[in-house]
Image 1 (tube, rainbow, N blue to C red):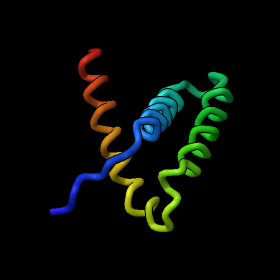
Image 2: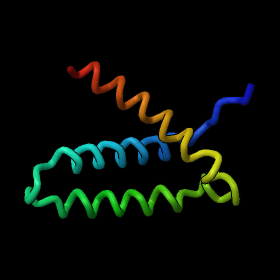
Image 3: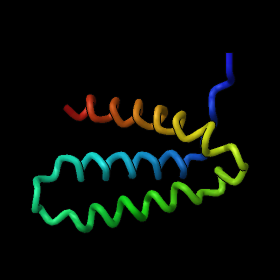
Image 4: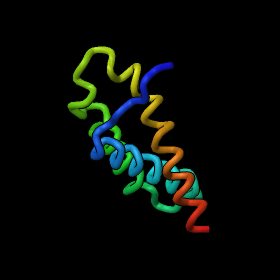
Length: 83
């Protein structure tokens, strides 16, 4: 069994912000003025990809999916609790 991935708290927070922004953009009606959301998503994407945690050559490939899974679970749980 593989050990669980450990991510810095700021990286988790960035991924959660990315997922939240993506969800808001996906739910926005056509022509709703989504420029600010698209720009935020681009900015967050750049910050995520250049985070120091990914400095190792294979870190992004091995960790990005696990990061999404870890934050998706916590975002889903928070949304269910708010409903």
